[in-house]
Length: 223
Image (cartoon, rainbow, N blue to C red; front, top):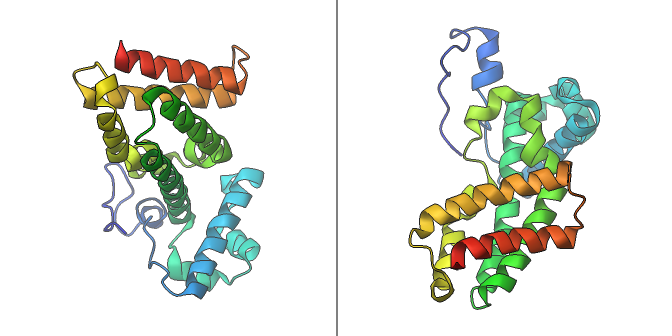
């Protein structure tokens, strides 16, 4: 895991109880044995369940431990507070999602650009829908974690594979600055998928939406 993150500007002075609540958000230790891994996973699942159903304020460490079926002492072996649990939850959700995307991208390297992109767009929409709360909404409840989770995004974890995928299709692509084009496509895709999942103001079907967002990316890359 990363080293301890220093207290951000404007945070409570050292020694204040609020400092630990906000800045100490790293795991205390990473589980290695199977039993420890199961315990840590149970705590993350319990935290997600409580936050989604009852709200972040009700996700106390005692409540998380109770739902996970472990002692609060066991919880504190791995996490110093509930903010650390939320950060780990976001990190593990992003990591699992990114692994799925990278695997699919590698399998599609030799496919034509447009159908390959369409399949990846479909996978991304599935991932974002399944994990919408964790990937998009949870930081509304825990805004103090925003600066610590900026790099915890699916597109950040998959960026190098995304670039390799586009480079593999260089014969079909006309843009000259591929790295900038990829960044713009990543941001536009995420924004539009979030909007589609939460609002869908145009009442598009899922197939129509995927066709349109794929066409947008392909036209930008190839025209």
